[in-house]
Length: 210
Image 1 (tube, rainbow, N blue to C red):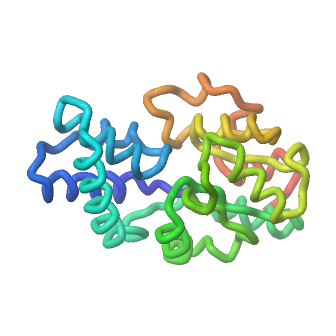
Image 2 (image 1 turned 135 degrees about the horizontal axis):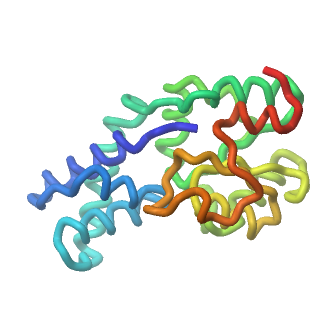
């Protein structure tokens, strides 16, 4: 739904600067996005140091990253074309919508509010809502329970391999958009039920007119 890579990479750059470490190119940091903040910080530190960081450094890095990301959250995030229109069409057709993200809850709600998407969702599952985040199925199963639909009758619209793996593990059909965080892979490499250009395209496949 959202391109938050500039904000995440910016916070990672601020973290490295605060810790006195070498910068990491944006393209490299972008490939670390999608598996939660701890993964992003660990991989960014490793890329900067040229070796695996110890746990103390990861902890310091994560603390710094969160401080800097909180300042940036929602400031430069861009809603992908067709997202708002697709969500509008789905809601108008009576579908219940849930946002399932690996982003910590302290950032999820403010971000959705700032970009004007919060009102579309009946439920939100963040990366720290449960003990396990995507690619585990738990967040999707929790979202389905909150929406009152069996997983097999739900549809995951995702933008990463983590989304697809979580959907498969939960027993949900899954469509992927090609513009997400693919860790250097292509969307065609990921096991899914179809590729769509946007959320609006997905709504169209369900014979919904915006």
